[in-house]
Image 1 (cartoon, rainbow, N blue to C red):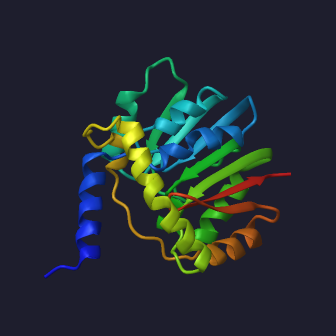
Image 2 (cartoon, one colour; image 1 turned 30 degrees about the vertical axis):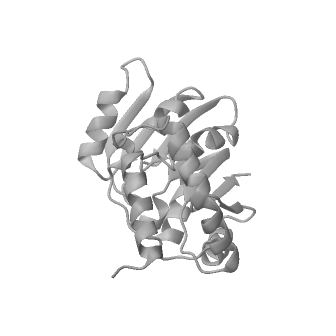
Length: 218
């Protein structure tokens, strides 16, 4: 016989399956607030269906999105009007990154799939002086602060699902079709390794099981 907790978790999972919302897209407006009003070239690593890349096109003269998944990259091209200055390529990071330099680099919920320090070094090398790197990532829960934020995110997650879907069942967004895997680095580990590569980087734990990094190339 299943426990009440197990039944509650299964019910919660069914609820979110019927009312999905993109936790990563929730941070897109916050990302824009970290960036200058105008920029030259921008790079979105792990662009998925191109939602963030198209938003960046409102700030940058040219945006380049890369993703390792050919199907989702093709979908990004389909969703992007010809007049929007965004190009897409199928490429792996960090090996497949073009030389740049870029005034803006963004990376959302992708870094935990990649070699962490090596990828940050590649971003650093491709970021133009005065440029901005913004990362939204995930970390493995371990500390009491992690667990408190995780617990606090559960009721907020339900509220957001209802608000974004207006209480009705909804189809899963194209941006949520990419395969994911759990993070293997804790936030303290991320903090330590990131600051070793990017001195002065600002990192924070966030609600909805995310953490953020902002670094300005002086």
